[in-house]
Image 1: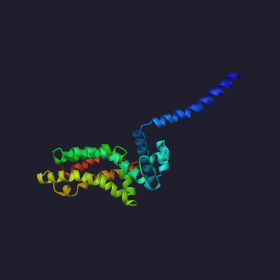
Image 2: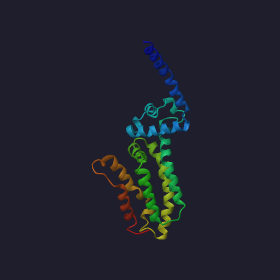
Image 3: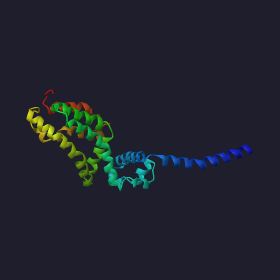
Amino acid sequence: MARAANKAVQERVGRATAKPRIARRRSAQAPEERRAAILDAALDEFSARGYAAARLDDVARRAGVAKGTIYLYFADKEALFQEMVRSMVNPILGTLEAMRDVDIPARVLVERLLDVFVREIYGTRRKDIIRLILSEGPRFPALAEFYHAEVIARVLAIVRPILRRAAKRGELPSDALARFPQLIVAPGLVGILWHALFDKLEPLDVAAMMRAHLDILFAGRAA
């Protein structure tokens, strides 16, 4: 009985000290790690529920933090959504901006752009951001305007001068691509929608479709 009593005491002591240890681990977590955990949880929550139904309470639960902790980093749900988008797309924009300064044939440039799209957007959870904008943008115009300013306008500012220069050099079959650079990523959007709606019924090889699209854009011309 003495051993049983001692064991019971040890278990109570263990339970009493476990909570402070957990609290210390949480408090020792770096602010950057907490912020990253919140952004990851936000992507999960927005992807699962959409913008309107997503709640900061549930984001906090997914991130393993108190709801009040979110407000240490983000003013509200919209600010959280915006920063989530920035954190996902800024590395890609950096890659595109590096391409802008390299004088290479237009086909090579577009091929690299499409490779980046397949690898870094369609092949990752970044495609969920685009799907969210497509589905939620009509109901929440502020989100669409934000995405246009932060992503679309910046990408077009990078690509348009390169394509105009290529058109003047005669590298393009016509000036259509220079006038409508949106044509570059059009099949990528189709791929994202297809993945969301029909992938289980008929999987789509987006990388192969992008290669076929490249041949169409340049009328079969080699680089």
